Image 1 (spheres, rainbow, N blue to C red):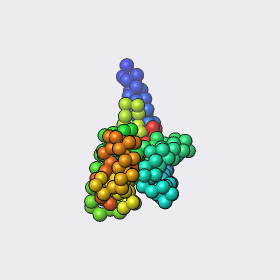
Image 2: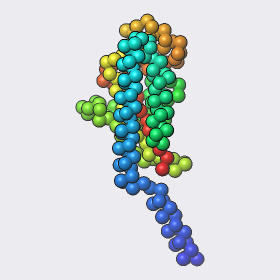
Image 3: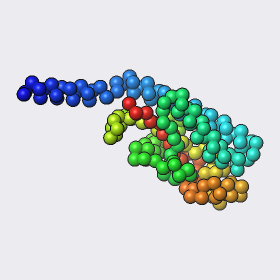
Length: 192
């Protein structure tokens, strides 16, 4: 009986070790997530600049609404990551942060307030969920001056932007930012 119990405990311990990723695997996932996030932000920024030049700020709203999900879907297809943009002041109703994303944004805001450079504001963790361990990554979305056309003080927004936001996002909360604030996070996850 003692022998059977010892074997059961050993099996449980080994099973637990098998599901814990090695530090090297986590570092690799973090590097892949960082590259993916950087590529997404760069691609979306390019699309926004093109839309702003071609059709003004009102046209840029369509990029965030339609092209950003397409860009994320392409990256998900290539990497196997689950990717979304979230914020407690979300514009897209699907962009509400979960508990981990909320904590991540709060931590990234503290780091920004402490003087860390915006481009280095990211973090990762391996978290336990009811379905197993999940790699999580968050990259701060720091408000740039050009972002204020659609995310700044509503009283300062062009009429075309106000109209487009009212029609496309009637429950919009993603305004009132100033340049340099963390507006949300790019969230990446992968079950392990």
